[in-house]
Image 1 (cartoon, one colour):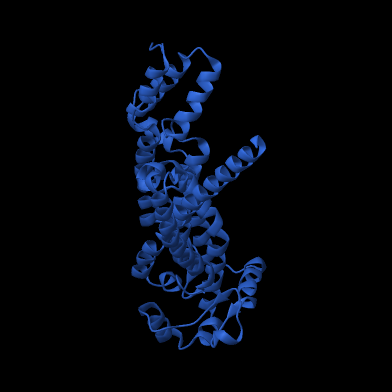
Image 2 (cartoon, rainbow, N blue to C red):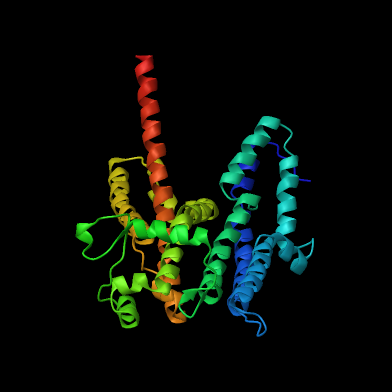
Length: 338
């Protein structure tokens, strides 16, 4: 067992490989496997079942896949066994931690290596990763099973209430006359051109059964906006530290030039955060074509990449919050001494 005789050996150990990222890599592979299982299996129709029964059947299968996504450690153990590389590395970390006799020092080292990604993902981080993949699988379930023949298979009262809420807060052409939370209008883009061919105009689209399906889908995405950002932030918070964010993080401002550089990055991140937030929350037909066109659904996956830019921005502006807090505390301490 390795013993620490001085702080130098602890420092050397703390700069070793990051277990968090190694675990995350394998967990991503496992989640991708279950994602592809869902991609090719959700939507299977049992001939003797009607549409509602097929929806129920696929929903049960979707929930089973969610459980499978939530236990990547079990699947890694099943593949690699208890002597897998990650398990051995984890055991070595905790063995080394146990060799530190000073309790206070051990606690400090534990916090430091945890923040630097030297420990495996905790349960919250694992479940957050599973949630992100589960939401994509739900997207597949909704488009393939909940919608049939351009209408909702199952539309209980609570679904109608959600649709009604979107309708009551929806701006229609001309949008300048009745500004609401959400907006619906067809421009000259490819997706909207296809919708025009299907329905004619926005009013006919909204009055159709598919309009209900699209508005309920928008309601779901609005409600999931914050949970998705939260889950993505939890998963990426540590890796972002080592993906270039450390160099531009306002917490590391040490000169006038670095301050100006961070200000410039603020404009960039602020732009992407604004575009992404407005697009996800206010544009009621941004993802609509993907509900009826498989190719458009895959194209929408690229749009979801804006979530990552928003998370980048959240972490960056969190750095500003810490920076100004430190400036304020220094000012208060200086004033108290005077």
